[in-house]
Amino acid sequence: MGDKGLKTFQIPATLEGVTALKDGGMSVRFHTNEISDEEKVLLMRYFQMFGWLLFSAQEQSESELELEDIRKDTGGKTPSQRLRSTIYVVYQQSGQTDLTFEQFYSRRMEQHINYEKQNLQ
Image (tube, rainbow, N blue to C red; front, top):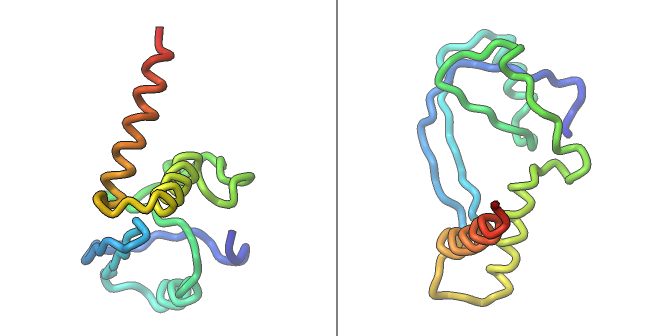
């Protein structure tokens, strides 16, 4: 999961742009407030590195940033991310051109939800 020498850090930033991508992902662009030279160097070490983004409207303390480590045995993905990726492959293989992936995904998720509801007592 990246370079172990790099630490998790937070800097004040504004979310300036969001663009939808063909594969169902999103491109996001942030602008920081003025940051120190140390923070600039650290930020550049992350340039073009895969990682995880956490965005909050408030500064977070280290204790608030404790995240459950559920991604160890799943290639770095949560179960919901794995399900979404699988549904995307099903969408591609279906050849359906009358639906966008988001429409297809919503319908498939509704099917999963209804299946689980049937098992409720």
